Image (cartoon, rainbow, N blue to C red):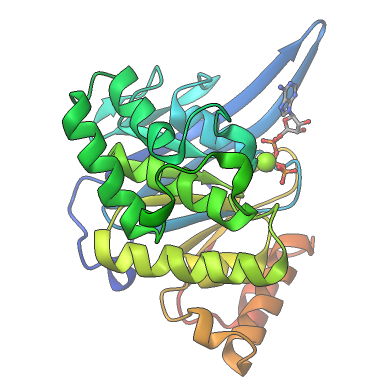
Length: 286
Ligand SMILES: Nc1ncnc2c1ncn2[C@@H]1O[C@H](COP(=O)(O)OP(=O)(O)OP(=O)(O)O)[C@@H](O)[C@H]1O
Ligand SMILES: [Mg+2]
């Protein structure tokens, strides 16, 4: 499938004619000595303002590579990535990445200094304003009382919150998250998903979120792009705005999860699978 999937107005009340982020026919490759590894093949999707857009696919299908390309860290072999119409060709403060490893926080800086650092280094704000903004976002993630703590004294979940506060404090046009909760235990992971959704209700940031957990994709996303195994191609795009943490374990949720699993892992004739799947709100690309 080459063109972005149209017609997702139901999941995106803030939809405008120009998407915030447009990924158009993007193929990404790594060149290592004599070898070329194709990570994604002609992937297209659009992200609208305030979307919680999830890239879902098996290990090695190029999710992280796509995120790096949106971040401007690697250039497409073919195709184009645009943010508000401008071609992405370098990293910038308008796209901030939260990674899986929470040891991304320099240990010699306090929580507040960690959040302030990017604001000062990018000359986004002066020190007093940076401090005010850092405290504002630390408050939002429930860490106001830990502003002067050092990262090694925090739990994994708290480190995750600092990383999120640090990213949101930059007020990026789009927040990029690469399996941000994968290193956490199951209960903390669920709590963080809940907090992320509450934060989104409040701040309405635009999110591009990578996971290989079907359940997490359904809970976190309002739209999910399914990628085939290596090299990643678009398999389908699904609207999932009807699900949240309260849907877990419910019949509709489980059915959808099973269908996604089949779409991701079953080879075979597309149209038949499509009929069998009976999604009300899905576009399948074969
Ligand atoms: N730095 C690199 N050099 C060479 N090949 C790479 C590099 N990073 C990733 N790849 C290859 O590109 C492909 C896509 O990798 P990527 O890390 O984007 O997958 P992923 O979907 O994020 O997987 P996971 O769910 O395991 O994180 C894989 O085949 C991988 O081996
Ligand atoms: Mg990855």
